[in-house]
Length: 232
Ligand code: UDP
Image (cartoon, rainbow, N blue to C red; front, top):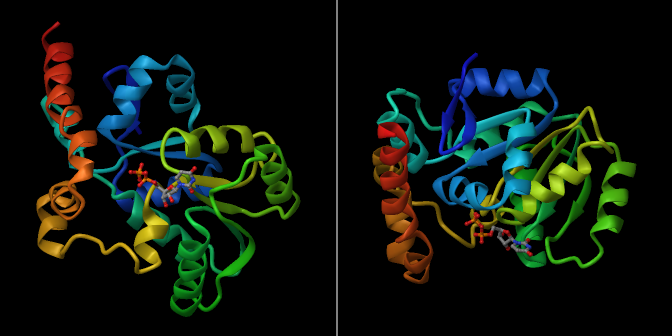
């Protein structure tokens, strides 16, 4: 399958089911990429290198889908939160680790996931507010999970997974951003109509206006940069 370039980073073009099959057959780092991350990668070569070395880079969200469309690629987005949930479903019975989010969010997430997926086999769970990263890396690798979801926000989660990769070469590891907040029930996902239209970012911004400052300059600049890349 083809990888296509967007603002210097390469993105995989699988459809949802094929991306799941690929991740299962090719353990390693899964990056769910968005415009903010592409922007960050352009400015930080170490982060760009992590993306370059990821086993799978999926277009999470309408921003990246739009960027790819402007470059002439008709590729459907793969929401990271849905991708991660499907992996949890498919890995039932096999050892799984969850790392990230606030302690109370994480315990709510564990409770909800366990009732939804009765055969979920959690071998390691830790919140995302730790100081000693080395300790967490050694604790989680000792448990030998085969699927690890990391919710530390970007770029922290991608850096964490990159460090974990050599310790657990046979695991599928996904950076899942704010997914635990949603699964905990504390943060609601946008209503379906917003999801269908690719406007979750708009809903979240209305609900949480302080996000505006974070995403507002990024999206229009992202589109301009993509067009500049296309025409140069
Ligand atoms: N988070 C964490 N440790 C940190 C920073 C963030 O566990 O040091 C968690 C945070 O609690 C949230 C998740 O990372 O559950 C995603 O954060 P955010 O919404 O900022 O990231 P985004 O999904 O927008 O990239």
